[in-house]
Image (tube, rainbow, N blue to C red; front, side, top):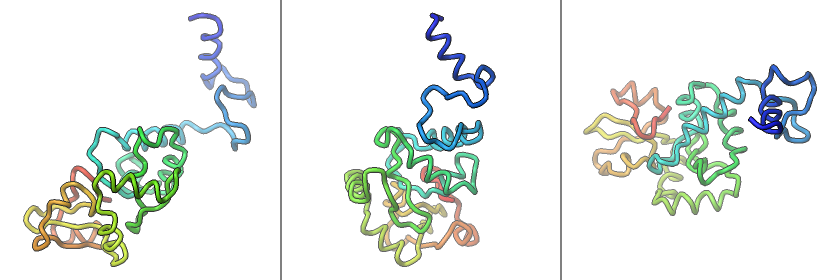
Length: 183
């Protein structure tokens, strides 16, 4: 490695930093260095917001669970709120735990427009959220999904069943969808 490159790489290594020395790329006014746990958590959340996956709206609790931190719902929101590339890592697909759309870095209107462009039934999902229905299941497959999952959109009205939470769906004999991974 060349001199400046080697120095920059060494400065990023915790063992090479002096206590209190500024980190390369550190933000001014930040509360302090992000600990390894915090950074690993943000990376895990970012990996779960995979742009290659089909457009499926999921709750923050599902993202937290799939990132290996089921109780870190607020941390998921914070990590996605700081997402530096919100269109490449599609955080607009993450919703609040009550089923409502929630906030977005570019505003709620932009989030709604993006979801509609992905052919998500935003109005139908909002209606279900108002009625307290967070998940829908198919009585033919025994699978429960978020209402905007591509698989849930194919459930015919006669075979659709609503659930308040995953525990109620499991008690009725349903299993979580492998695509939207409700939690």
